Each structure stands twice: as structure tokens, then as C-alpha cells.
Image (cartoon, rainbow, N blue to C red; front, top):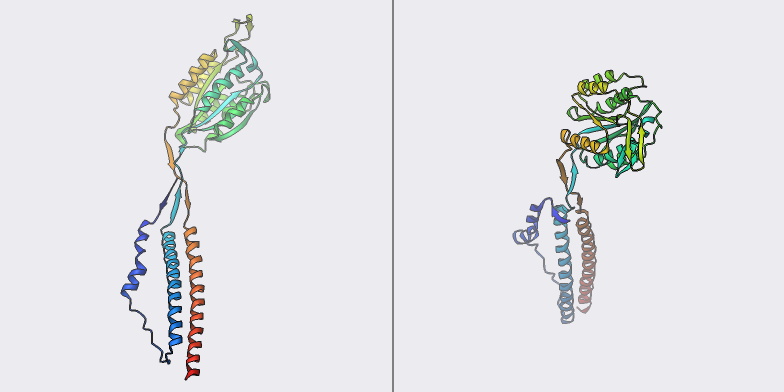
Length: 344
């Protein structure tokens, strides 16, 4: 942090009072015709000495007040450290299938079998974390589709609510068309070239009121690119650390999913294991790169009111102080004149 002046040229006004004192004519002080008496002359010399000290004091205060006033007019500002704010890049909505089939444990993390949803949470969570600069949103769907997180730059919240997703909470079936329709509704207000939907499912469309291809047509009209990831193995017997295990194959309607992606200038991917899922998200990062631009700004706090308050305070002090001294001087002069008249 450092202090800067918005109007530094104002400091050129600092010599103004000195120039005024040199250029303007001095006031003429008329000498009184009072009778001079030695006693009062000595008293006058003593008071003149005291008055010179007071005058110097008021002069110093006046100089400080003028410096404070000019400093205030120059608008001192406290400039904070540079803060970088990412520019919003993609408007990226994620639609994740949480139907009953996503509980199938045919994925492995560090040799341990996990459900498809658990694998998606881990890999998609990493994907969300480094999409800095993007607006991210989350839709969870089963028999029904629900907006879990509206588009936001708060990626931590998106990841947190994805981690908290519970199987079957949206119903046991799969409404792919409704999920796409809800995403279209939320993305249509965003900049046209940056609308992206990443839909992840392990089944076919078995529920919902909107047909998937009709929803894809709506997405294409709105310029939304849909990338679909089909999750799950082809079924059969797989080897696990606990021996051979039979798993149910996915009910993926791959021709339909490919048609949806094609209609919207997107792509369809198949993820049969965690490694392929990671590669797909890495590929998505290349196809739809996050924004690298950012905006920098430095917070500014105005400080002009502090020197302005000091200048006003000193000005009031000087005015009342000088008036008080002048009143004492006048009363002293009046007393001296009366005393002179009595002696005469």
C-alpha cells in the first residue's frame, strides 16, 4: 500500500500566501496622538515582545493550516495492493445423473471398487476446481431434474454440493431431456458463444416430459454446445482386489447420446473407468479452455477529509485566538489612554 495524490498539481498553490504578502499593498496603521509617558512606553515594549511570540505562534499555525488545506485539495488516496479478478470465460453447466444405476460399483480408485457416482464426484470435482474464470452451475437429475447451483464463479460451492449429492434423491429413473431443457433455460441468458453443457449419465432416457432430441434442438437454437459422457462398463465379470465380481452393464443409449451431441456441435465420450474419465475431462479442458485473461484493480481509499478537518480546526483556533488577543490589546490601549489623560 502507498499514498498517492489524485491532483498533485495543486501543490503549486503553496507559495500563494507568500506572493500575496509580497505583491499586495500593506495596510496603513495610523499612529495615535496620545501623550507618551515613560512608564507606559516600557510597558508597551514588554507587551510588544510578548505579542511577537504570540504572532509567531499564530503564523506557524496558519502555515500548517494552509499546508493541510492544499494537501486536502490535492486529494490524497491510499492505494491498496493489486487485486486480480478473472474475466468470466465459459458459462458451463454440469448435469449429473444421480439415478439408481449410478450406484453400480464398477469403477476403481486406488484399487478399491467405488460407485460410478463416487468416481464422477472425484474426477468432476478436480475439473471444477481449475475452471477459474468460468461461470459454473450444477444440475442433478434422476426421474426429475433439479437446479442445484445456478451459474456462479463460486466453484467451491459447486464442488461442495456435487460432493453432497445423494443417489436416487431425484428419483430412480433418468430424465435426460428434462436435464437438457433446464440447462437451456439457465444458459440462454449468457453470452452466446460461451454456452456449454457437460452432461454425465449411465443410462437411457426413461422419464421426463421433454424428449431428448427436442431438447437438443432447443439447445442448438440457443447456441449451446453439449458434451455428453457415458459412464460405466459393458457389464460382465471384472477382477477386484476381493476376487472376481459380476457387474451389471450400463443401459446407455449411445446412438441417442451421439445424436444429441452432434446436433449441438458437441461430442460424445465413453468412460469405462476412472482413467478414461480423467482423460475426457482433460480433453474438455482443451476443447473448451478456461479463460486466461483477468482484470487487475487497486482499491482506493480517499484520505482528503483528514487534512481538511485539520485545516478547519486550526482555522477556527486561529480566528478565536487572534480575536482574543486583539481584544486584550484594545482594552490595554484604552486603559493607557485613560491613564495618560489622568496624568495630564
